[in-house]
Every structure is written in structure tokens, then in C-alpha cells.
Image (tube, rainbow, N blue to C red; front, side, top):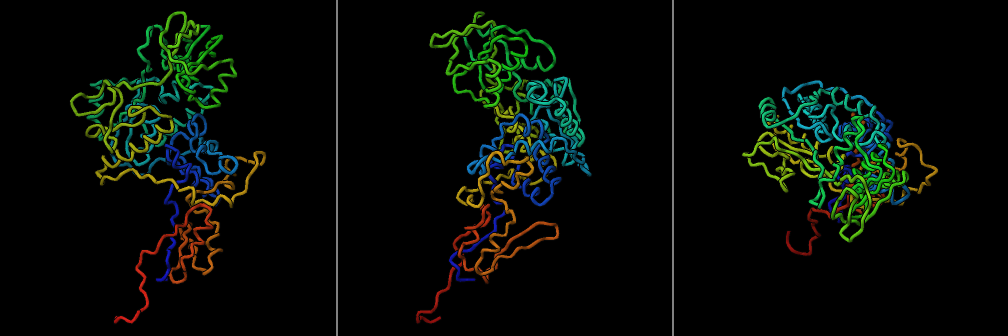
Length: 492
């Protein structure tokens, strides 16, 4: 009781698991596996959709899955199959909101960031309209990523699911300053999520000989057959560069060489696929000049090519925004939003208009934008978007989990058996059974949730509960109460 030197507390889900913390979308995979462990597969599938409208297209198809790179299980044997688990939510349906708020949100840009924002806001009951200048909504998922990397049928299903919750798509709508003013006037809030729409390049000598990678890939996905040389050099060996290399081979190139100033940043599987086609990557290579005959490096090296395609990233085009409302920019291209992701009164932004990122970054940015837009249109008190700290590795007891060999791995859903459930109680009852004073109580609430408590009248502060917890849920701290000592002869 009062004389304990230390006091335990059951801090369930107070920390983010490494997978959740390192997922820019913020998906709590450990919670999904908790539901599966409890036999609630449908709940686990729907939980993913609370965070992303693209569990199949992004999580299960084109995401590099930084969650898996951070997975605690990877330090024991192999990471949990999180990407494939995401795909299990790909074709799930979602009920539209039962109540509407009457608030109208205009979103400029039908790419991943804009659609993520639209998804979150529509599910809160707002009327959301997405405007995009392309003939088909979907941004880079639709226009740029090769069909060989992403199923078009899957993309179309996930886009229809976004529409099913009340989002309206307006395609082929070029937003200039006049159109922007009209959208703003007709909306309670506007979100600018146009992404990177112009290929970046440096002022090399001979830039007039370059083919812009973004437009090249868009042309391929439109079903066209863009002009392609026999010997192609692609400047840039990131994922967009690998997509461009793949596209060049599909369009008939006989040889493709990718050059980069640094070690290729593309996913290993994309590099392996490109090299499997016969492609070659040269790095470090600092481009200095482009000619009709090829590319020169600043060290004098020359690579022969009859076409040079640049694919080192994109920057936004934001000429439709007003000039006189204090909107801030970084390098005259990217927006610098305030803490609530607004750029001026009632106008917010998300995704690659702030800084270049991965598709999962765009989804997470859309979630944050929706959080603040909802507060703005509903007149709610400002609250910072909730984010947790990562559970410290030393809190986890990995020794309780046996090593599993690759041949024994099952399907992603059954991986709940291997998930450490970092930071989230797995209801294993180890604390309950290990407490020498029987001070731990397990409470099962009417809604099915579980809670563990420690009886202060029984607890001696030994810390065994924190020591045996495999998930790092129990915390043992010094007793904050002042301990009264026995009298030493002084008068009370």
C-alpha cells in the first residue's frame, strides 16, 4: 500500500508499436492483430479502412512498407507480413455515414493526398467534391505507376469505394485562379492537394534534349506509345526512375541505363526487376551535359543514348492560388502551411504540395489535413493531431517469442501468432499469474474490452508485472506519495 517504493500502471496503447510509429499513414497493425487474435477479423479489416482508402493499391501493392522495416519481429526472425495483411482489406465495403453535417469541402487534386483527405472528411458526414484536371481520378496511381506494378481493376474498385461514402469526382476540370475563387466561394473549406505535376531537372547544358519522365509515364498509362529511343538513359534511380526504365523497355527500347548521383533509392524488388530486363544502373554519376548523342558526366564519362529521360522527382504548379493573402512558399514551389495545415483562411493543403514524399506519406498527410479541416468547418476547439511516441525497445520482452523458420510462416492473417503486440495488451495473463501478492485484477467490460488493474492494498511494488509483460504495457515508477516514517521520539 502506502509504503511501496514503486507503483505499477497498466499503460495499454499509450505508446505506438514500431510498425505504427514508422507508418506515415499511422495504421496500428498491432491492434489489427489483436482483433484477429480475438476472432474479430471483420473488425480488423474495417480498422485499416479507418486510416486509408487504399489498403490494396498502396499498403498491399506499391508501398515500401516501412512498418515492416521497423517490425520488432524482424529482430527475432522475419517481420510480420503487414503489407499482405493490408491487402486483405482491399475489396471490403464501407457503409456511408448515417448523418450529414451540411458542410461542403472542395478538394483540388484527385491524387492520393486529396483522396485520403476526401475519404476522411466524407466519412465524418461532410459533402466532399474532388476536382482534377485529368480525365480519370487517381493521380499517380492512375497516371504514372505502371499497370504491371498496380492492378487497374483494384484501383477502380478502391476509387468506387471512395465515391460510395459520398465523395463526388469532377474530372477534366482545370483549376485556374477564377475557378479556384468559385470553388472557394461555394465551399466551407478548400484543400489544395495537387501534388507534384512538373518534372524537376537541373540547369544542365542541353536540357532541351530531355524527355520529361512524368509526362512520358502518363502517356504510357493513357495507352499511347510515346516516342522511345533504342538506347535510353534515365537520369534518376529512385522508384519513379525505375518506373520510367520499365516503361522504356515496354515501349521498345533495346537498352536502358539509369544514372544517379547516389546509391539507388528505389525498392530492391524494383531494381531487381529492372536488372532482370537487362537494365544497368551507374552511380555515382553527376550529369553535366546532354546531347543528341548521349549524356556526359562531370568526370568526363560519356554514355551513348538516342533519348535521355529525366526522372528525379516533381514539383507542384500552384499558379491558381491568390497572391495577396500571405501564402508562404519554400523555394517558390512548395507551400509552407501553418500548424493546422492551413495556408490562408479556410484553405488547407496536404501531400506533395508541402514536400515530396511516398504515397503512404500522402495518405498520412491527408488524414492530418482532414483532422484540421473538420475542426475548422465545425467550429471545434483547436486540438493538435494526436501522435504517440514509439514504445521503447527495452520495455519489450522478446525472449517470450520463439524463433520461427521461414518455411513455417503461414498466411498474413495467421501472423497474429508471431506478432509481439508491442505496446498493446495481448491479454496473455502473464502478469495476472506472476504477481506474488495476487494484486493484479483482470476486468472484462460489457463492450468486450479488457482492462488490468493493480490493487494498491495488495501491491508491494516489486515490478514483476512490468518485468514479465512481453508487450511493454506495464510501467513501474517511483511512488509519488510521500511515505510517512515512524516516530523517532519527536512529538506528533
